[in-house]
Image (cartoon, rainbow over all chains, first blue to last red; front, top):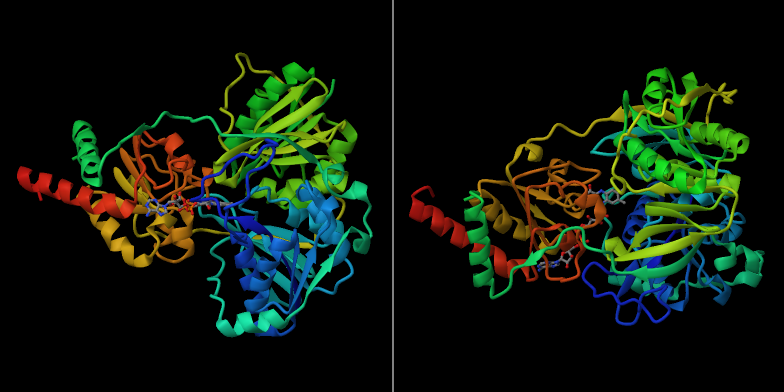
Length: 262
Length: 331
Ligand SMILES: Cc1cc2nc3c(=O)[nH]c(=O)nc-3n(C[C@H](O)[C@H](O)[C@H](O)COP(=O)(O)OP(=O)(O)OC[C@H]3O[C@@H](n4cnc5c(N)ncnc54)[C@H](O)[C@@H]3O)c2cc1C
């Protein structure tokens, strides 16, 4: 089975302090740690497990500047066979739609039985690239997938709905699935894997190589144009409890007592 | 007059809340944009829903078909493409739910209609249609304009808009549209619903919940917080990554894909406050959050906030509560 996994190199922002940059349309990237998008990590693991079970190849592909190479290296170290990085100054300001078009222009020329992506990217949370790519390729898709099985040349997948409910779908192959977290337990990278990955080639392609025009990509080829970023207004004014851990604990106890909770 | 379409969402015999949230926003937008709100309902035997929706919209487009009994994005895409080409709505609003995420991006690409997903606000401003959404798990808001078009599409976040009944029912006209589905959908078929495994602990019944997130770092730290929960006479709940890692069973998960809880006290420890989590707990009576990041979004939903390492606060807090209980002779 030949599987393509689309991955994105994203900043880890859960614990980081974010600053809006001078343009007002992005965040300052300096000082942030980047890694493979959490959802893509599960997608890659799922692909590598399938390869181990059924044979075939795994190709990791990303749209991103040079520093996103480290995410592709990680994919190679974890079991991907090939890696492709699509990059061009003209790709800047591409939204999810333009990104899907860029991916499509290359993937349409590759052989695949299955395409996996993350259910969303942790930075913009759009959840758009996967299904748009499936539409451009004319193959069926399913999003937020938590289980994938195969019978008689078809896939049976569990999709996550709300409140813990799931649905089972039968999908014809080739297909594209966007993977939800928790579908598996991504493995750690072995030293052997890292060494092997260093020897593998990352293919780099730009606008001229993929047969799209300037108008298909970047802001011109996008649905969305960012006007400004700002810090969200607070919904509820928190009262911050300050002091040493001991003083804080005392304050919490007082609050709980006054509310009859202890 | 151009329509603003709202795709009614229903499952297992019920119209889902987001439908009414979207209709409320559609009414407000329609007034400004000189358009009219139209509900679109697809399904099998859903005439009763159409009657209900008519109170909220000027028009209800009803498409009934055996093949629409259960949600299938391919069937929905065919029907909606047909309706959108026919009516050319100014805007189509779909929920950013498990159904909307499956349907909207592909539908928009097929029709070449600009789409913005997971929006928390929408506005027609002069010539432009702008939206507000979030990035970086709620740490930043973004205002963006959609590419100029005759028709737009958005998916909107659950609970972003408050559902309100119109002062007087709109008495919308119900238009029965013949189903354009001629053949079975064979590329993707719905098989069945899979219910969550029966749970041991019902966190929705607990009066006190101690919720833990990725800040707990390691499974070996769970007994420490379990102690705190017990001392408070409560139970442990958690964010999604804790379940994904297998550290707690799925019946402990709070949020859109877990449980919605409303305890007397919710203590959030090392939880950042992604909206999928917050929607499940923000109506708790009292919320206390401990997070070492002063900018964590959880603080904008909390009554009390503590910017500190949870590992420094939790043991002291637990001891103080135990001591107090011992004094009172109830330990
Ligand atoms: C379709 C979909 C459905 C989802 N459903 C749910 C759901 O039902 N429930 C849910 O919870 N999530 C859900 N999510 C995931 C959600 O988007 C977030 O990824 C998740 O809630 C983050 O969990 P967290 O806050 O524990 O982790 P993180 O976002 O990683 O946050 C960890 C926090 O811990 C803090 N921290 C770290 N160390 C310490 C310390 N020593 N002391 C104090 N604080 C510390 C950090 O500052 C940070 O704020 C869903 C996502 C999708 C796409």
